[in-house]
Amino acid sequence: MVKKQVKKKRPIVLAAGVFDLLHLGHVRFLEEAKKAGGENAELIVIVARDKTVENRKSESPVMSENQRRALVESLEVVDEAILGYDKFDIGRVIEKIKPDVIALGHDQKGIGEMVRAAIDNKRLKTKVVKIGKFSEDELNSSSEIKRKIIELYKRQS
Amino acid sequence: MVKKQVKKKRPIVLAAGVFDLLHLGHVRFLEEAKKAGGENAELIVIVARDKTVENRKSESPVMSENQRRALVESLEVVDEAILGYDKFDIGRVIEKIKPDVIALGHDQKGIGEMVRAAIDNKRLKTKVVKIGKFSEDELNSSSEIKRKIIELYKRQS
Image 1 (tube, rainbow over the protein chains, first blue to last red):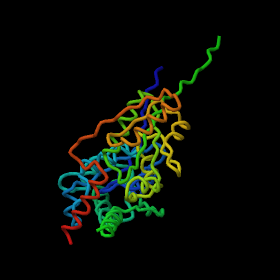
Image 2: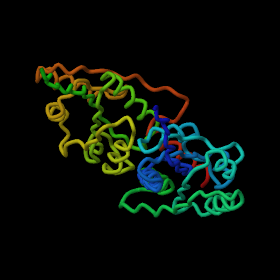
Image 3: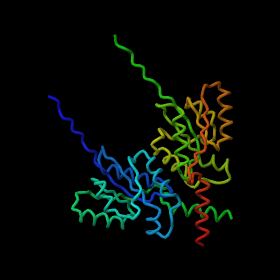
Image 4: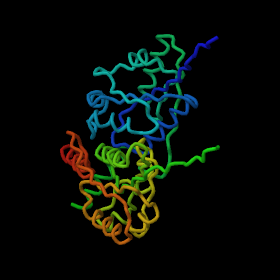
């Protein structure tokens, strides 16, 4: 008798962010996110569109959406990086990807509320996991990196 | 008769650089470098020490040597990232790692001469490959990224 091969689906972890000026804080966040899905997890990352960032913060990202997406996808821990929808819609993303786990960064409060509302609304079983702040003695924030570059410039001029 | 299993050594490609403010130009350079070693190649990257950069250029890197090394190692294409010697010595690195291929970036003229001199001097068979400039319509230079951040800052203040 030939046994029917059942291909076990890998648990999908979804994470999202801007990922401007890629730093170790981003990488550690993504590594922790993937771990939350268990050993065999697949990590899909939604990279925010330039327009979405401009609407939510007062400034544009330094790196373009295409470059931010490609850089995130070049990380070993990431299986797939996708640009968000033109019109920001996390509920639609969740419905499409159907993740088992959604990982939220320490500074993702606003998006966290939207994620939880979408899960409740659609009665999904998606687990939401909060990832702590990665605290090495390093520049691990895009705004800190910008601040340092501007400080160095001011000192020189 | 039991055949003796001969484990075939993977060809080693060596690349080096500062890798400050990681961008797509860095990733594409490393991808091309690895390709130059053939299908099964292993890519080892030497990341320059802060002191070495300060001695060679007039300014310090924005990201510390530890962060630059860890970020480079988190790329899928990189097998191992190592900090350079405290006292810059590319000849010593080559002698230690014994790479089959050394990949040079389009802007690595100075180090290229030192690499060739070290190979001649030690009569090695190491192949030296020049990687062309990656030309997408993107920010792919650390100094361009700094310039853009300073421009944005000047416009705001």
